[in-house]
Image (cartoon, rainbow, N blue to C red; front, top):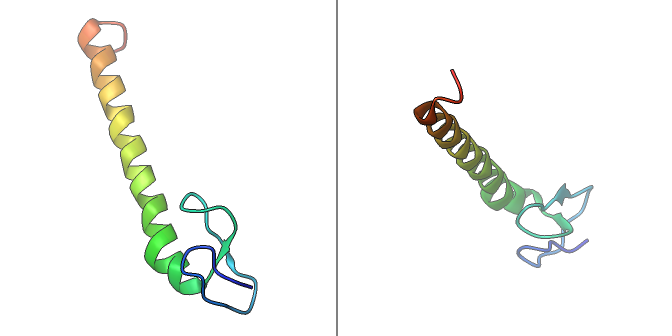
Length: 63
């Protein structure tokens, strides 16, 4: 198979390249590109959640 991120051929099962790209990627791109992107999305989602809770608390609609 061919990695959708770096274009190199790889063997084996491959990895889901989402959310970086659509398709399969090699182990190197998974570890260096895809996993950090997913972790970044988790932290960004947590920050958005914190801001929403703070906003609700400041208006008195949430305890």
